[in-house]
Amino acid sequence: MLNIAIEEQKTAILAIWKEINTMFSDVEIKLKKRNKILFSRDSECLQELIRLIQLQNHRTLVMWALDCAKVPLKEFEEKYPNERRPRICLELCEAWARGRIKMPIAKRAILDSHAVAKEIDDSEYGALCHAIGHAGAAVHVETHALGLPIYELTAMVLKYGKNNFQKPVSEKINYYYNRMLYWQENTDKLGLDWAGFLLDNTKPNKERLLDEKRKLKQQ
Image (cartoon, rainbow, N blue to C red):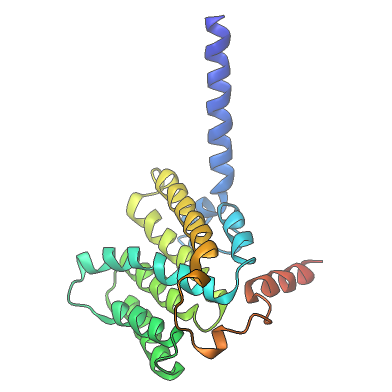
């Protein structure tokens, strides 16, 4: 009986590792190719999150992106405390979402956050700047929201290395998913001010539309 139990445990462990390897197979390929961006809309590990994103209204995605972007911002500022552009990006994009400023001011701040990535010559922390920039740009269009995990997870792989990223990245994806569920439930309960263009619930989810277009091209 003991031998049977041990064999069952081994089988279960092998199944888990097989699932993990499948989940991150595209990341492994991109690492071997030395790609700068290690995740995409086709990444197996992001499919459940993408499906959840496609169900949300624009306001929920804005709250989710700006909320989740606080984590990479904190990490970035721990290494670059005097570089303020990523923080300014999030602050101005939130002001834009609230209707307090117009798009050109926020757009400049978004571009500035991306510019930091090119200036610091630091792939890991540069990816965090891109993640923050995309989070801010989610105010403009929903499809930018996914840029947050794509770039932040890339930074995590660079941080932990090819042999150790799987667990922290999996945990981070679960974090994204749970935060989305939170904002799905609470965004419209908070009585927040919103720019007029974010109050239109008749517009279809742009991430869902993009997915439909991509599937049509593949047929």
